[in-house]
Amino acid sequence: TSDKLQVTSKYGYRKLRVWHVADRLAHEVYRVTKDFPRSEQFGITSQLRRAALSVPTNLVEGHARKGRREFKQFIGVALGSLAEVEYLSEFSLLEGFLSDETYRGIETIRQETGKLLWGFYESM
Image (tube, rainbow, N blue to C red; front, side):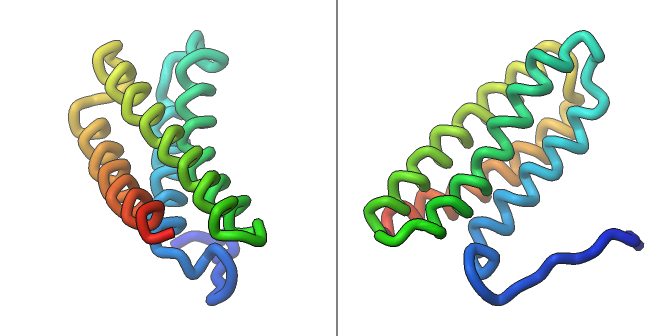
């Protein structure tokens, strides 16, 4: 069990299932990149983390906007960041920074995020 505060809310962006899955992806990327080589701290580690964190943060920012059209633009940015996560995690696998098992775990969450995000984009 964790002693960390559990933040929950029925309101705002937290009611979006896509945000929850994207948030899980970002946390998982942060967890697995802790084991990346120290020499990659300002390279692939930083870039993969930024891309992963960009997905839920763009949902948060888009949700705060007033119009659906503007929100849809932020979802589009999140989709682009998710594509970046896809490439960077594949790159990390090929460079030996991720094990096959760890890569598959990240990829499973990334695919789920992508399906939800694309469906959300189309519904806007």
